[in-house]
Length: 454
Image 1 (cartoon, helix red, strand yellow):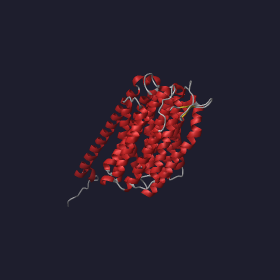
Image 2: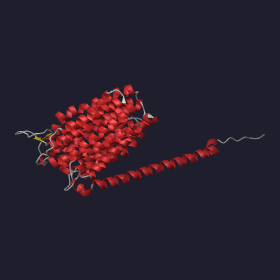
Image 3: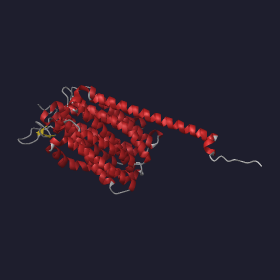
Image 4: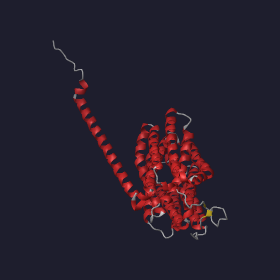
């Protein structure tokens, strides 16, 4: 009799199991190597960001800390955007998604109704607590991200109210941050350079957070929100540790973004160059908001170049990011003699490219119009900063800067609303966008260009 002894562990000791173990070990080593490389890249990027942020005395005045805070805030904002896009946009059919995004856009517009008459004057009255105001906006968004994460998992009704509160706090953060920048400027560093550094820090923060957020979204839409909670918590600590100069309001007055001379006891009115640059920037910002939503839905319906809709939208986002980065780099290095005139050129360029895309619809023109929109929006904003610093007196510059930032954000939202409302017909949409840019260009050129005397 032949006794057959059965190995109680045949699979772990078999040849197939050996190969499986080797593959698993190799995968584990690759994962550890990738994680280590990512960690080293993140540390190196953070070190370079800190060196750049502290250059030219920014570390001594406290501007470097605000730049780092802006990077963390941008990273958290991207995580929230990814989570909400996965919940409101990609998870539904195009017709249903348009309704969801329209509702999201209404929630985006609503904060301005609060910011204009309430938040702005409130922050103006309590300037000596601006660090705590900035910290409150980040802390509130962190709490609301945790609420939204629970609503996504459990299907609760708190998603939209929490999203609304998060957007209100985000707009309030933008206004308070804009008001803090002039207070932290080192000697010899123009406002346009400081804002270029803030923008570049935001780009770096968003670029680092985006792939992480997308990976977490594959696990569940709540995970990017939970990571955003941690990022906002870190931003809250950073806000409280900002320089006490942020709370200083010595010698400041209120500004009105209108032409003319203010009467006794009224807000100072900025000069024509500021109004002209602001109108041109509003046209560029509205164009950017329009493209963001209009092209996102068009590419879902009719992907260009035979590409998958997700791939096409991803390429569009990359093109816009390259444009924004290019505008930041150029704005930090180019010393324009007439920055308000440069903004008009950017509006004309955007109108021409929009008209070209309407006439010749294809992958190349779609990517080109996204790149030009990002470039024009960013360089135009930096040019506006240069005009404000050149033509607005020191005591009202902070107020003018903060109020212009609010108006530009509103222009983006209005442009996005138009992108939602129009039929998904590329020649029609891009043609209307080109016409709107021409109208904005004419409206800006009609403003008297004489600079306001300091």
